[in-house]
Image (cartoon, rainbow, N blue to C red; front, side, top):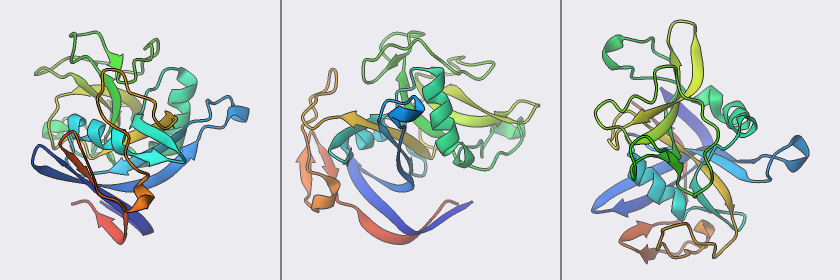
Length: 225
């Protein structure tokens, strides 16, 4: 499956010696207040075989229109519907295990939900309440100690449906992540010591907490094998 655009940007991050690259799939879109939204921007990024930890680190370094990014927190049915409507056509289930489920074109994408601190108690990385969920029918099942959450469109027999699934912090099953931009500059993340970095467009290289984040560069195409 290939994603092509005349204006794709990519950025890289070095995390514990591993270099991770990500591309825009969809430029950040605003959930308009006039439509019942919160005024935040949401973007979808592609990075082949990215882990949740890598995606969380990348998301926290992104800036858009002066706001800090983080893996998306979906706290209501309305927000879930907006994110699905905005990105659902690119979300799928391309590597269902053992051929047990039909291939669904698209990618899986990490979101900011985890129960790594307390099994079964899923929390958003932003510290927001988690009153809403959209788990796939048999999920979360913690199969093999799964503490991190992604969206997919798995076909359980009645066609592909958008839903959430818990997964391990491993590379391979997930190729993207969704970022929400809603924090003004200087707003700290809960339990985080990440320092504010310059806007990506500044072209500066910054070193922070062992992470290296480089500015965007234009590329013509981005392919997924």
